[in-house]
Amino acid sequence: MTMVRFEFRFKSNRALLESDWNLQGRIHFHRCSPSAPPMRTTAGAIATALSIAVVVSYFLTKHTENKSSRRRQTTSLKKSRNGLVDAIGNTPLIRINSLSDATGCEILGKAEFLNPGGSVKDRVAVKIIEKAMESGALAEGGVVTEGSAGSTAISLATVAPAFGCTCHVVIPDDAAIEKSQILEALGATVERVRPVSITHKDHFVNIARRRALEANEIALIRKSKADQNGAKGAKQINGHTISEEKQSSTFSLDCKGGFFADQFENLANFRAHYEGTGPEIWEQTGGELDAFVAAAGTGGTVAGVSCFLKEKNSNIKCFLVDPPGSGLFNKVIRGVMYTREEAEGRRLKNPFDTITEGIGINRLTENFKMAKLDGAFRGTDMEAVEMSRYLLKNDGLFVGSSSAMNCVGAVRVARALGPGHIIVTILCDSGMRHLSKFFNSEYLSQHGLTPSAIGLEFLGFS
Image (cartoon, rainbow, N blue to C red; front, side, top):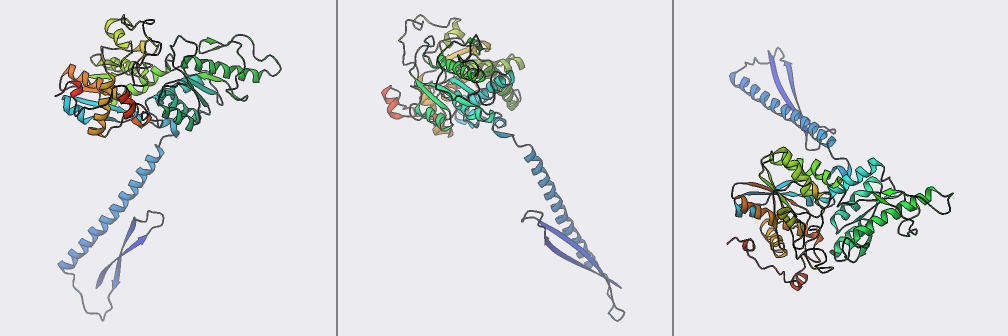
């Protein structure tokens, strides 16, 4: 007579996670001695044996699944992004619940504040630097210069070290002070200057252009040690000729040249959104969207996204939302840049136009010229302030001034198109960069912009 005995042991496997166990089932066959009393195999014993076999099979299957899960995790790790630059883009597209429910449309915001540098401008910074290095206009060890109201500068200062470069930023002194503080913390050199007309040689953009020329002169002098007079002759940087200016002490003598990012006119800005933001929106909506709306500063975002979406589906409507003091609304609606009152020469030198930062402009940039727009809406400072507080209270979204203005635009588009449409906008950056002005109660009070709305009555909702 043969007796069947089942023995089970749980054995820790050091190669596996502590929570994983390897079940080993062993079946032992014993020959009964002749003197042993005879045993009969009953139906109950067979049932018990089968039940135990099922248990063994279950645990062995779970062990196999655990191993497969670990293999999938390993594969996932292999797909991890390579450094800071690869982490930029592919931001989520989120439903803004309060605005969607109020309008009857699906209003979606591209959460660009989740980029490593905290804004949509990270995309632009990477594309500008990549193109400059590919063309040889910028070398490792060089300095990237830019005139910026804040976000592009912060993005450049964030990504430049990843390319072995440094950053020099010229910023208007009326920009929120925390932007300068962030730039300095990132290791950028910050030069704050008074705001003047773009036609003035000391406009922050024009100064940034000169700084790039100075950095290049220093690099040329370094390469031409035999020539005591330094670099001579004509050389063009970003289409501008180097003049024989005095050597600047702004840059170290080992500087390997400079490159003026020129975010307003550099079409790498447009391409960042045509090749990145636009395709992402199309993929994330499955091509099911009716409209896109955004404000413009350089014009790169609204141009790149509108061009891409229109190429995919010409029925998608693309709109501009424009803050006070900007001439773009008139350009889109009436075909002229200025109204009679806004014409250059009839305005104060430094008018208080808007408290929003990074959007609105009174000239056509090369980037904005690429935009394909169906119309435009105006937004006010009061609406932007109220919208920012409304989103924080109802959605937990702490966004900056340009993001708030974009959401004002999204609601205007929703009302124009009617319920049942899908509308996408850009959440450019968070409110963390706007504490000293846009989220400063005292500052807002001084300009008559203290928020008081309970709901969306500031946009005509009862």
